[in-house]
Image 1: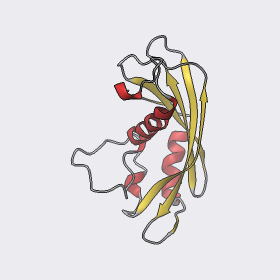
Image 2: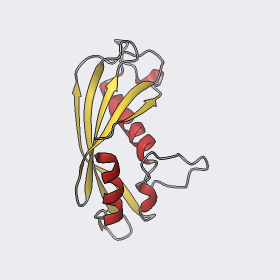
Image 3: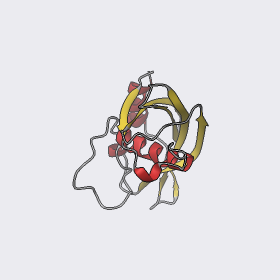
Length: 150
């Protein structure tokens, strides 16, 4: 399975009163990591003038009315993630590809000592807002994802 590493900036406001990244901020950091991996979903508003280079260009293969929706999150806090003002390393992997969803895993690494602090996963499902229905991944989309899952 391929692992992807991205560095995600942590804002001062993501820190809690104990000097750690707040658990509520973790979902936003997971979102930033997904955007770094896949780019913004097609139906996410006006196109960005500074296009984000997706590592896996899945969303570029989807129609303009398709939304990537969160079907499930799982977050396990293994240690406190200290706020240091530095970007946090996030390791991601495609865990599962099904007909209409994908499961993505995350591992957040402390910038202080390199240990894993948070292990998480997200299940993304795809919804066509115009048609009002779930979208199944095409054969071409599943083949693209399979290149990065093995």
